Length: 118
Image (cartoon, rainbow, N blue to C red):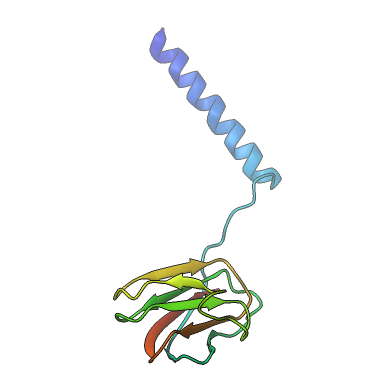
């Protein structure tokens, strides 16, 4: 009897799930359709790490070395206004944005990788 009750409950759940999916009440994420990658040398002058792109889901910036960087949404970013990305090889930040991202170092230069998901 218990097995029959469990079977009925599972069948009801499947019918409800199919009905919801068919009605479109739950949006389904199509996932990332494409990627774009680049490398940029960031200096002590604000450097555009990624341009603004409509349709971008997210971008990840990864530090390649020992120099800290500071990132923000405009070329006015400074070491006191930017988000600090530590000077650790592999340190990264993922941003769900379509906006441009600018980075700057306090001194010297640092290579970063950028990967964008669309």
